[in-house]
Image (cartoon, rainbow, N blue to C red; front, top):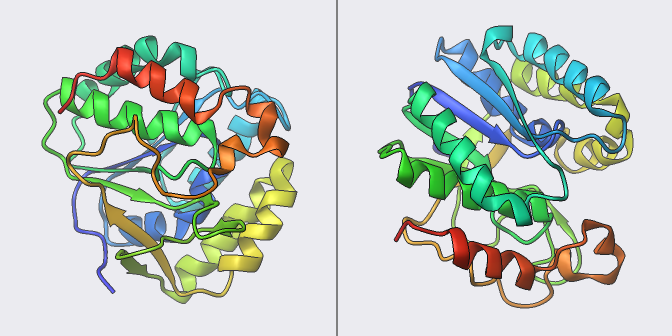
Length: 246
């Protein structure tokens, strides 16, 4: 177990409810008196509507003890981030330059959801453009690595934030507050609801987002995920056009 370091943390989430799988860690940082900022990057207008989902986020901020002024909504277009990567990189660079966090946490690059991969890339790109030295971490949501479908799991080395009983209860409340996403929250609670830790890992400094994050079937390329519109190859081509970090 390796708990998150003290510092000024910024959590970058693709959608309202992504934070449910790192909510216990957020609460532990708040309990220790560390400043925490939460930013939901897409407008998340599907499955509940933007206004309802952002209202759920504000309720979650209250439950986790994050001040309302530390909640941010960037409103990039959900499921349309691939063609918007260049504009997204500029917006994210301005955002990180303004906040100047000492530590960053974002969703993992795991080819689970196209918005997750786009955000992971944008975090890398904007961190480089803004000249930030803040260490960058990621936490898992879901992946097809290893066959099947896996929720909140890393294959290979990773770190774990221990959770108190109080933090775990706040995490469960977070899942309840995302009522518009109840099918996903049911799965999240079933997988993680009694687990007294949350996985995370330090991002590799030289990640190449043009290459698949793992071998085998990519969840975003599976036929039942055609609603995402963009395949990994589309994402990789756009990354090639936008990428400046090395």
